[in-house]
Amino acid sequence: MTYPTFPKDCTSMLCKHLSPELFETLKDKETANGFTLEQVINSGLKNSDSEIGVYAGDEDSYEVFAPLFDKVIEAYHGFSQSDKHHSNLNADELKINGLDEGYILSTRIRVGRNVKDMPLGSAVSKEQRNEIEERVSSALNALEGELEGEYYALLGMSKNVQERLIKEHFLFKDGDRFLEYAGLNRDWPHGRGIYHNHDKTFLVWLNEEDQLRIISMQKGGDVLEVFSRLVLAMQKIEEKVPFAYSDRLGYISSCPTNLGTAMRASVHIKLPNLGENMEQFKTITEKYFLQIRGVNGEHTKSEEGIFDISNLRRLGITEVEAVQDMIDGVASLIEAEKALAEVVK
Ligand code: ARG
Image (cartoon, rainbow, N blue to C red; front, top):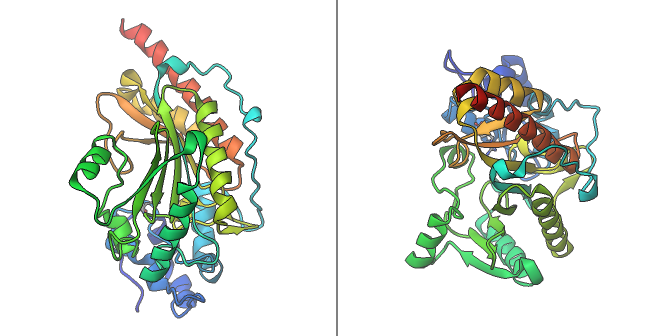
């Protein structure tokens, strides 16, 4: 492989940070599972509109290709090579402060997890993926109380179930081009599936971008309840299926944006006036390290002034701090929205 040519208007972290010199040092390296630089950068090369553009194939990728990953990690999370990740799941430390919950349509917090001693999704074999599905779905099927529910494998899923899950916005997208070129859609739909509890407030995606995406969500703005349910679920699953965790980088994920807590805490919220004042909107989201997305997930646009607002940083801060970023930032957005609505009146 020779040094790739990036389009002139490319702004991804890959094209920013992969210099010809760095490329030369890394181009013949390989992880213990045989994951190569070519595989690390393929998604970003094929999708030149990527924001990041790199994926890991295993925990070892973050070591072997550290000169590239560390640059991306530092730029995205503000986490330097000498930093160490710490966890804190104590919900009692969350401060709701002045958050006006009535303004919030729904709240969702997810974490990404991958199975210890397995390659990540972009390097896993079909047999390993099936084994992961088997191990995780049995752990899920043993959950009790509020978390009790059912696992639906994508393979052989009936039209009825599929339509219901799509309608409820539970089913993940297939054919995502970023995942496709990262090798994360191989053998689709084998090994993929969705678990949800009876109340539909707790969901697990299997073998999508990460081997597990553990999701807690509900209508309204009770962030504490959503967080507490997620923590319980994470702990219950990990009792049966240990997760890949590194002392320095925390929970290991396919995409470097998800390392550490691997946590994205988000709300859907109607902010029509701020939506018309994007500059003010972005000043607030930048101050609180928040990301703005459309309501139909990543890479989608906002509809009817409804936005998905979430924490941006996931590594080098604790779970409690990640959720606190979201709470404080959203409280500030609501105040600004109220003030703008007064002016419009
Ligand atoms: N690889 C995609 C990009 O660079 C997604 C990056 C972050 N999102 C994610 N789902 N991992 O734009």
